[in-house]
Amino acid sequence: MFYQTTITLPTLRLKALLSLLIKVGTQAKEKGIDDATILDYRLIADMFPLVKQIQIATDNAKGMASRLAHREIPQYEDTETTLAALQARLQKTIDYLATFTEDDFADAATAEAHFPYFKDVHMVGADYVIGYGLPNFFFHVVTAYDILRQHGFEVWKGDYMDGSLIPFVPNAV
Amino acid sequence: MFYQTTITLPTLRLKALLSLLIKVGTQAKEKGIDDATILDYRLIADMFPLVKQIQIATDNAKGMASRLAHREIPQYEDTETTLAALQARLQKTIDYLATFTEDDFADAATAEAHFPYFKDVHMVGADYVIGYGLPNFFFHVVTAYDILRQHGFEVWKGDYMDGSLIPFVPNAV
Image (cartoon, rainbow over all chains, first blue to last red):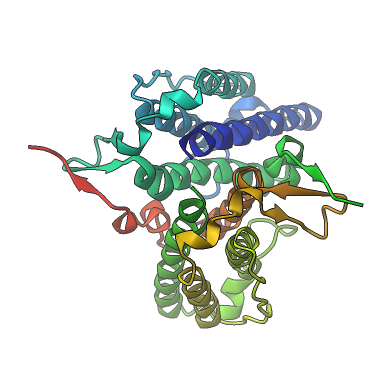
């Protein structure tokens, strides 16, 4: 299950988020809204802005894959100030996930996930993915969408779901 | 993987959402906000309100489990008008998910997921869960949280994640 939950699933969502940001970029130009304004959009004053939601979503994706495959987590500097830079960060993460194969997760069931803010405890394998990794990842992906939607961009749930990425099978006639 | 992605994961999130709604109910009483107002909260005029987000999240959870286990999907009437009724709907769904065992998913890899709005195509097994079922479920769970957060309730990401539900393992000393 680890390849599908940790590579396939996040890759599909990051690709959809990348398409969404490209669409938003076009609409922002038409509306004359600058990138800095968009990157700072948030749902309420004490929630993270769009830029941070996407930074964390990509951190979650590269972190989850790396921890389960016993690789060192690539460090990104959180310096994005434009939509283009956020799009590049998404693409870089998609490319990083593409370097993993099923074999990388051979020992994932016993891999330990340690975090500085869980000082005395850690999570293991599937418990980490199911109870923490995926919920955390989706939190930031969906909130990024919600921020853009709530600020009036013409983006729709279909953009978030990006159905074209799902393998569909024709129904029998 | 199917039991974990389809029962364990949604159960953890629905339980967290139930605790969240109980917390919100207490705060609403203190603030003198009636249930009808809260159930109709939304992020923007043309997005679904809170009540619908939770109805769909529970529909997704019972639908995904039922389709993969070849069970008939229990039908709920969408008639909730109070927080208590929404909490009951969450609990009913948690209880329904608890009726499944690992064995119910023995044939899940080849189970077909058909939807009226995908007229000519369907999805199969893991593709359905990874590409459609989980992203759809999380969309509505996270958006429900975002709606409550954006409307000023004192709920936090920790409530959404509900860390107490994750099996933690003590670090070696």
